Length: 139
Image 1: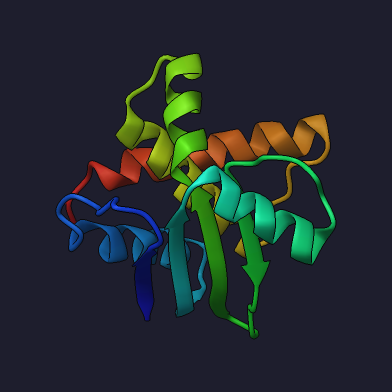
Image 2: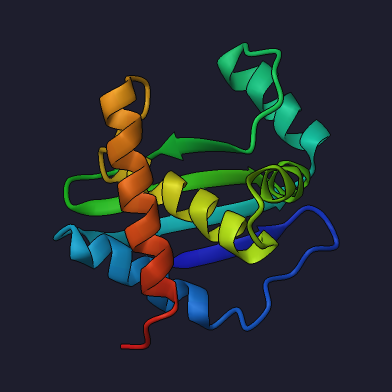
């Protein structure tokens, strides 16, 4: 089950597109959808999560909590909409493109992709780009 929680006034446009897209990403890696929850919040909310659970005093665009069980991809994915807006401007992409990148980034972490080394980050970016392109393809 894929759930979306808004801790701000934000709401996804055409919300029905997202579960299908996320399911295709997961199934494309030969895994199954478990329980996924995307929590859309602001910087302060996510900073609080970062401090409380990870002891990191930094702002970030996403924090993913992994509850994967075998082939079932499950987790809580917290996303700061303020970081998404700022990153979209910095990267000269649309808000939607940056949101899709970050949403897929969280799912890709749950699928086992890493981004700490340069080569891992390059592969993560490639997978994000593939995922974004999948959003625009109807099945």
